[in-house]
Image 1 (cartoon, rainbow, N blue to C red):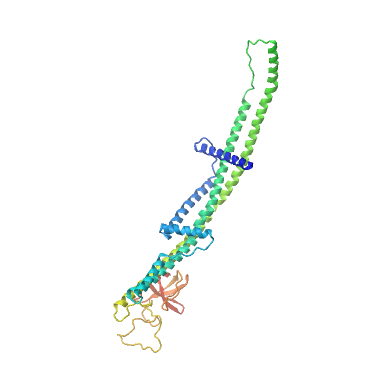
Image 2: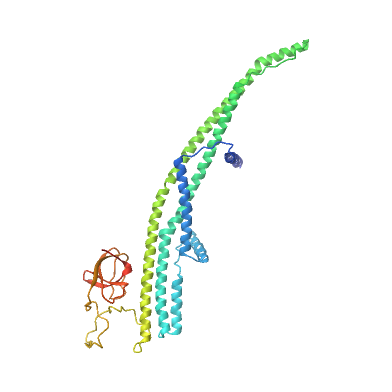
Length: 420
């Protein structure tokens, strides 16, 4: 307990001394050791990185979770699961919830009614959009938000701690310099001061007792005074030596801490490279998500148009047909089926092998993203592969005919990069 009290008193004294030094520096009454210009630049760069990382992280979270209440709840839930060391369950997106509501409503109204069938169609695509959104949120959190948050909660805290230690070492160094300066001034002043000489009154009549006192005084003046001056100079010299030793120790600790801080601050360059890769991953996740959304909405529009045409045609069912390509049917007629040759009964669509329309603009194209064919009229794609594409008259402008070896089928334009 006694040791702890002494240590507490010592720490309080050091804190008070540093506070006095810091205040005098702010008031211009004390000298301040300036840091190396390179170190100053690294500190300014680190502060800039920290400030902008906080802003980008906060705004990205707002972008991915616009509702502040939902955002706060998500952060609390994430914090709890992280402390419990459990995997965070996937959250249902608003689009998925909307799609489920539409499907439930269709069951109430009847899936065979026009309204019910339309609700089913739109609801299914809303759930697809919600699934794509959830995957985008998970990918963005893993590849972008987590690295930024790890920097602020990990690396930056370490850098801040070492910078505080460096500031304390600098204050100790300046305190040592000031103490040595005062000790040398006191030593020089003592060395330059004249020897003390006792003066007596001129009309001093010596008596027998006075003669004895004079004898004692002269004896002290000759023997004691030189010893006192010598001891004082010795104490001042020892004080100078002690101040010089403390200054050397403070300088060594300051240099060591400055080197540690410099190495940590130079690591900001690696942080920038890491954040650059995270930005590329985030942009790629956004591009994939928006391409999926565009594709789903385009398909939804086709389905709704097909539903509207089915309702307006009296000979067809009022319910929406299954998603089948308007330009290319899913397969050839079944065996034994007679296909009329008259113009009035001629099928409106032909299979791709039967289509003999002129080809226009045959080009090479690079596939940007993976694509899974939804039916036999479409062609599945793999990212970065090269295929041949062309269009036919009357074809939907958002689609092209793609060829890869002996395989042929429709491909979405948004998944391709046309080459010259």
